[in-house]
Length: 277
Image (cartoon, rainbow, N blue to C red; front, side):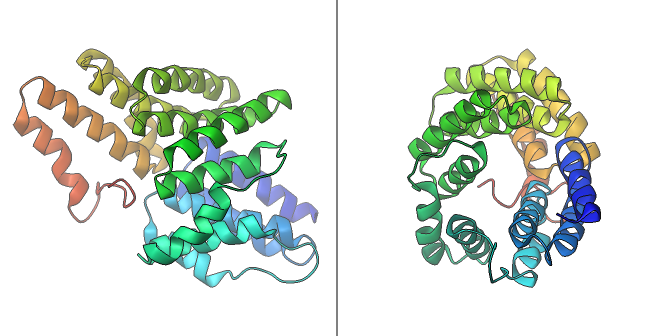
């Protein structure tokens, strides 16, 4: 791996975990360009990471542009089929061609094999979440977490717990989601990953809103938004505001709830994340 490409990739990884995700997107694209001649697989991984960063920022246009303008490389050492399927599936989702997106995403979500590293399992979990296949997302998230712990890859524990907690929340397993989000928050803090910590705060806020704990919601929403606003985490901000609106409804404050929700569905700054339906 070329030294400059390796350095830029390391910078991008730091930014996506603990900095503005828009900056991380640009850094991943620069790393991809630097890595492409000598390490096409790493370059393809960097392109997908750039798309992931744009997704976290709620920037659908940039996410789609990244996937369209940086076609998969060909030749020896290029990306394996699951990465290509994931890329194609996400692109088709962004193009609202959901019927065509299902097949490649399903292949990623249900990929079989003795995966002993977290990364392919995290892709499987992400694909399953896009499909709404919550059982598959929970299985892959749990396997990714087990693999990260087995390899002492502590930097991957927070994200494994993100996917697992979010899948459990969507599946109605609120107590389990809360437990895993609490574990994820501890892991993210220990790893210095504020962006992942913000995601776990948002899940904890939603879980508390479902369980009727408004004071907990307030604290978790404030913590999630503090980082989301600084680092451009639109998905985190949308989930946090949704939790706050639910808590307001529970308090009998429909006007406050509407004030929380209205910006999420309108145009301009503060708009909600495109993938939180």
